Picture 1 (spheres, rainbow, N blue to C red):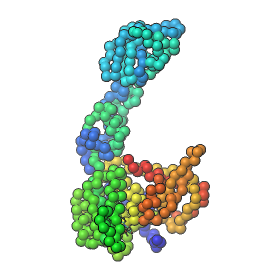
Picture 2: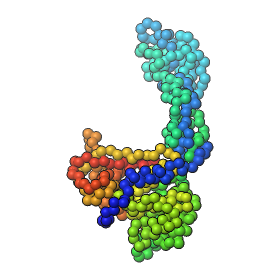
Picture 3: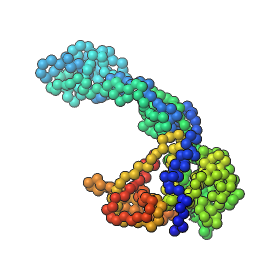
Picture 4: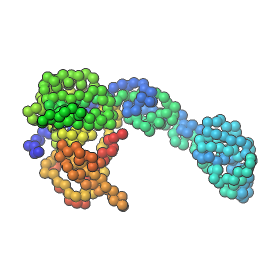
Length: 412
Ligand code: AMP
Ligand code: MG
């Protein structure tokens, strides 16, 4: 579909700046949250390590702790054992001239300065013998060798995932001051939409965007609290938007945002709220609108499912970052060689859907997937990246260098 050139269309980069201007500082909280509730939230204050990690010197292996000063002359060495220290025990100091049986993670007894792994040792009752010399500090995980007391463990605005929660737990912190995941309302609009499972009448299609949007919103860091479908009917839309804006931090709609006769959202939002931008120099997803209704931001996406995917990843992701008080994710782009050829005649930024292949030597190649129509949801099955074609018309030949944006970066 060709659009008339419109110099007024913002670029995606400009749109993201506008999102930041309107949404930064609007995160909820701070609230105090237990670790097991805090996944997906963002830190409202930096976390400093209250102690060392590891908290004490301990053995990295199953073996024997000893003091190298007790190894005199040439190997083989023989030492009597003075007992066993298991992980979790508070060990008595090592008896001079002895070795101590020790397990991985067990605290190193005072007076011991090294560990020899059990594979190097012959055990003979309550004595050990070994052929190798062993240096001081062998197989010891020193206190503070991972994190020192007072170190910055997690900076302000860190989004908490598995690693971050584990780090907090590792230093004994049970609760964190966080900004909660923003709540999201999802609304599919279009009089042609029928819920899956129902009978589909003539001219109707099943509503896939509601499911696409709801799961994308969750994956991108939102908490979906409302999901609904609504026809292209002014008063029904107003009712649905009233409900949606009253329960969520941001409303995301699909459909009805372009220039067709049934595209009611732009007029409605302009009349009842405010429009910050409408239409971007972007393909697919050009008609996307961002505005505000009842003091609630609203991102109105076009109806084609591929446009929904592109605009969600490019705009909903940073919007949710702002509303989470999280550091804004910057898309990771890598350069790859084009397998095939692509061209575009328009001057908008285009996100084609591609598939990355790695050659035996490690080189990245990308090929556009078959089916680049913005209605072709099934073609996305084969895609694992966006093939990014920047602003300005251009064509690329086989082997040319292009940018790809791996999709996996967006998903938990
Ligand atoms: P619109 O943006 O309303 O002009 O819709 C663009 C295209 O996307 C039309 O072909 C719609 O039928 C289709 N579409 C709109 N909403 C949905 C939806 N929820 N699920 C699947 N397709 C949709
Ligand atoms: Mg429509």
